[in-house]
Image (cartoon, rainbow, N blue to C red; front, side, top):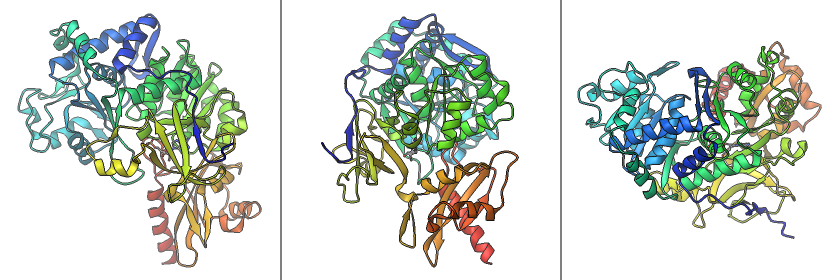
Length: 559
Ligand code: AMP
């Protein structure tokens, strides 16, 4: 028996050796008349046959615009039907889709467009506080002057034009509604020929990794990477053509476009978008009114749904399964999702953009204990290991850095060989930067990020442990623990705490609650009560921001 922290997932079901476009065509053929996509905020519904009609039309338009295999096509929009259509149409012509975070402002947009060398960009007109047209006018003053497709900009020399989803876009933009007529000028056979040229190992997607650390890097993923991850994630959930999945997570992130869209595509399931960005009530309404069987979300989304004042007005009894992922899933929240949202088979998935994303997942057969304390076992066709600071595999039960190898590991960071070689070892292991331990059964527990570990007076402290403990207090809805510099102990603990609506407790009471139950060095020195944590759009808590804020507050208290 090998007691080292290494496991390999099962290999019985073969991987799909095909492009995303070919997989799309196969699903359309199998499930033509079944519902493929429901976009509730746009009142749009498509069967797979109807979706194919639109996707093929837009793909032909992309050919008419001169998009070549390997050209980059940016998309900067909140969740909508056109996002999904662009994803599948670009895959059919072999254009690499560059996901641009809808919350990006002009500098970040310029960085992503330039770094990836986008040739065309699809954008919304405006959303929330973002005026996309206005920001593009600032970035590209020459946009209004020439004809669409003939853009020549010193700042973005590779960009040829911008397609707006709005029918009232100013001159200079090509309008989405103009695409289909444009596509009619291209014979269907040309699209078939293009699709036949494409290889499944070629890049098809660039995703800028979310800003929890450093400068964004463009994880470059192939058809093979993301199609197979969608397949394996959906298999683990037991998805079929009878499943209806509500996708409230952003499409620009792999949780939406891979685990959501490609998870459905590979199983003929229905994709349901409740709103342009996460809204708890719209999500609950989508589940109830669409009789959804599955629901995705990051933990903070499930917390918002559970605590929503109208939750009990919605019948969620059609739900069977779903995934909670993206950040540590609090045990209490998991229990409530099972008990109060009818998601008896809910699973936990762990992954990162660079691994397409999922590499570990709990299984349908796992008991509650496994599902609430671990992120499960290695996914099919993948390998996991946990290593120490010297790169050696540690014994089971020992904490170290988690690494992933297999079909899902990205091709590399776009145009960044240095960052790629730091992230992927010569033997093709992706170094995740996450701290984890593996038990005898191969289940992995995530204990934090390498940088998260707090060392207080020589004691190693994993914030996760204290966060889980704080959740057990009846008034606490969410808790995050960070370390800030301290003269005496090196680091001191700060707990940020969010209460359930209508609840609150005094700092002293919470401290006493901790003192009675956890080791003295783990009792947070400072508590900070808040309504929101600083976080990225994908629900990742920005602990570095919390650290900055807490350091400033402690400094000013000391005066
Ligand atoms: P991203 O590339 O945006 O998907 O972020 C990946 C990171 O999210 C991982 O490296 C982990 O730190 C974190 N993460 C993802 N899933 C989980 C999970 N189930 N539990 C804990 N952390 C997670």
